[in-house]
Amino acid sequence: MATKAPRSDAFSKKTTNRRGRNQHSSSFLIQKCVEIEALPALNDTPPDQQEALLLRKLQQCSIIFDFSDAMLDVKSKEVKRACLNELIEYISCDNSMTERVYPEVVQMVSQNLLRTLSPSDNVDYDPEEDEPTLELAWPHLQLVYEFFLRFLESVKFQPTIAKRYIDTKFVLHLLELFDSEDPRERDLLKTTLHRVYGKFLGLRGFIRKQVNNMFLRFVYESERLNGVSELLEILGSIINGFALPLKAEHKMFLQKVLLPLHIVKSLNLYHAQLTYCVVQFVEKDAALTQPVVKGLLRYWPKTNSSKEVMMLGEIEEVLDVIDPKQFPLVMEPLFRQIAKCVTSHHFQVAERALFLWNNEYVVSLIEEHVTVIMPIMFNSLYRISKEHWNQSIVGLVYNVLKTFMEMDQKHFNELTDAYADKVTARNAALVQRQDHWQRLESLANERCAKLVEKNPGMESALVKLGALSLKDDESKS
Image (cartoon, rainbow, N blue to C red; front, side, top):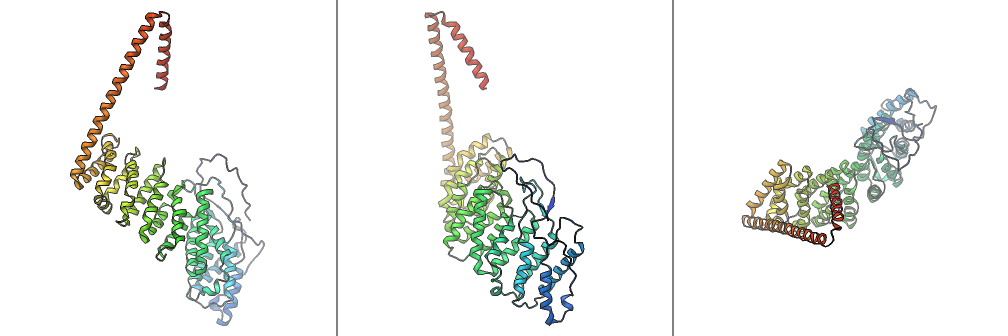
């Protein structure tokens, strides 16, 4: 049995070394020195004896082996693997199952799957940089997952019987496994939990509540949960099936759980799935457009350019499904933020913001409200067309300005004249300010000269003071 790694200091410095792929075994209740023999095949057994043999095989598959030593119990491991394959084939043929089978199935699945995950060998595990730690017992775990899925999907499956054994405790342990580093296990868990959600109506509210709690802990406490993307995939399917009108519980979930997920630094690992969930809500209830857009603007990153690019992509997907009647409610704060993005010195942020004008539906929305949006965008666009260091951005800006000009030539000319007047006024103010400083400097020089005439001894002190000020200016520059 694998020993647990010692806990490390949570405040220790994060290692920068990239780790290679490794494997470990979870904390199973391993039964040592157990040797199992192959039982007769189910297909070769008379029908009246098949159920008894099935129960024996399920009990046999409940025995757990230690995979940390590849040479230990090799024969028994192979017998169990063959037995699991046979069970999968048997359950796939839609053979009838009496009530006696259900507790044994759940017991076998619980023994194999519902275990304590060992602490990561790398306490500073970074999903983007480090290879995941794979589960050593996967040859058996995979087959147990597949068997359980076939069991749930069988046409002979009876939820009314199964709900006595697949209860909230079982689901809670199942959800804990989403923190596994092994992506193969999380993928099968995703399908398994989705089937459980579909089969057991009484567990749906509990599952949603527990997923909410997991996300809240992830956002506000740990910022670490390996299965966020998989859980969001399940939720995307669940949201798609919500009945209209949406319940207050579902709207609260959107605003208090889904939208805050944007603030986590590992957003890129699950952003695609999160965007899908958010867009599903906007499609289902147009009235949620305003809280969604305001929520996105509230959690807009200030110093993370890659997150800004992702958020701009999400904004475009929201705009793709927005109700035209809802657009005026969000366009002013939204385009003020887009104007800031256009002026970003990070060319990818500016480019992604300008790409919004390649979307025909978005352009049609802008055209309907061009008199409001053009003034918000114009100054930023015109300034960047003269100042941005990246020529491809300058080209995109010219295309956007041309689009605005084609939408409303008269208003465009007015804004151009107003901008020119503003620049002229700013330049005049700059010249005036420089004149004021020159006059002050002249007055200061005249006063110094008069002081020296009256007090000749002050000349050396003024020279030293001038030298000190020159040194200060040099150090600042």
